[in-house]
Length: 423
Image (spheres, helix red, strand yellow):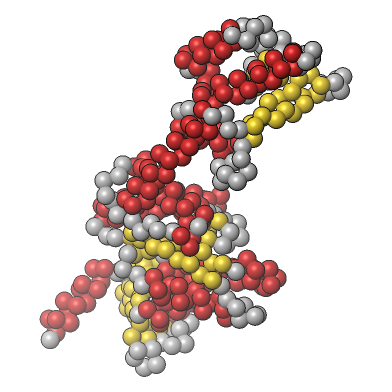
């Protein structure tokens, strides 16, 4: 019996540097191990002390949320927190614990030198200003890191995305108390996340948590729903939509993984209710399929000239006279990709910007020639992509177009060089 006990103790100390037991009031009832390194005091001096008093103030909200998680789910962590030390800077530790219903409820915690399951490090600029959680890009980066770390460690991670419909309404109602509420909500999300530091605010009411793939996601949903309802003066709470994506390495390369993660976040934000991605490889297949369809639609729009050209006057400040008009493309307002910026950016990305620029030139030249037929001379400038102009094939096609429309060198301008094309 003694040998079994000693073996158990040896295993325990090989996994952590110190152990603490706290009761239902969160007071320390037992402390053993490297407590002097952690707190500057021996274990006996910690007995009876509120455990939260040992935690750096900025991490207390996270620890409170983690302890509540243990009472509901039986365990929490690891989370990375700072433990105060007398006369020294706080110790960075990994903290995890288990709840047992003994003597009114006890939480048994292990503390060890901080270790990260994922290696990404983030600055304040990577965080959402309101919640303090990771912003969209940083969250995508840490999910990418988790995918790589999981493959190396033989561990499974998952990404749960949460659309909290009604959250912004509640925050407006809370007024001055909205800040504290946002902090509590962020702490709850972090408590479920890897290292207590892998939760993010994707946009607006959409949040994300990176967590162990064995975590009970239903418990997350229930906990958040109850937390928000209890804070709502009207008791309405939120309409929570959640989706979990398993982060498994199925042979995608680094670039494809990163792109698929961002695609997954975008798709959930567009329509959480219709979200159907549960693994990255499914997301990759959907992304490839959508891109093919989008590229086909893009080429069709260009080939059929399904866009309008509007003209914006460009005025010389010294004379206040119109020097020329800039030609701008406008697309069908019912199209989700109707933004000229989105359309042109994708055309550049897909390698068809030369086709679009040539189609714009054709429409602009037609307008110049129409004005000539009516006895008017107008100068129009067309925006040309640097990618188009660096393509010899585009330049050759443009020269052929200009040869067929007569001498319009004074009327057709480029907003790249501001020099008239010579026909």
